[in-house]
Image 1 (cartoon, rainbow, N blue to C red):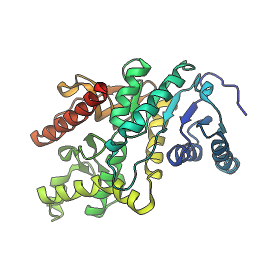
Image 2: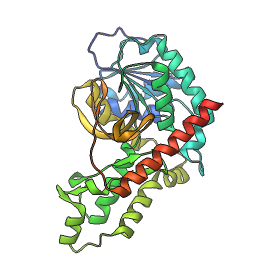
Image 3: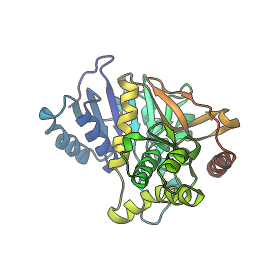
Length: 320
């Protein structure tokens, strides 16, 4: 059953009602971030079941009006989240999903455009850097209105990994990952802090080992987390769902935040024609600004390698 939408009613549409889309809907509802959440999927019966399952528990937890709908419900949304596409299988990289998911993304954006009136598009589907760039190209919206989750989950995993190493709460760790959401991710160690103190200085004060070997180990552990979860349970969905809540809150509840997400670069770090993650200000209009900051030469090299890797894949797609 569809509901009438009132301008400014904090409406979110989620395209794709699989594990990721349903988990995002559940997280948004529990956090009471949106007032109206519509799930859209080609499997109408399953989508209706997912919506009802979440909806039935909301009277004691949240106030969101959550229901199954169709692409016409994308009209007047503050935020449209795209999760449609097949997930990564055990042993696959995110880039292995290209052939299947680029075609799916084209169908999704074409369907959204028929009813789109306003709002930000957030791409979750993998490979997110490639699909974000193509979705932005196809939607033809102003700079920043289409962006992807990019390295926000990788950054969260990095913070968790560092917190475990130093034996402290994640709340006192600040750090992020840039580049590709995948093997080309680059932890920006030069900006990692513990309680506001640069991590190298903190570790020296606490007699904790901190050198290139430790950094490489923590980076490797962060990078392989997704594959390890998929090998263990077949998929990942809870982690990205909670990360999306942070982005949705910034967009629809006017609580701007800074995090590492992907969007088509407009000359930042000398790069154009590619979407990769850099620290960005997220607000009502999506990526409102990509922050230009200084990194170490090693971090720049890793970032530029990621840019070229993603750019090569985009060139390959355009030739086909």
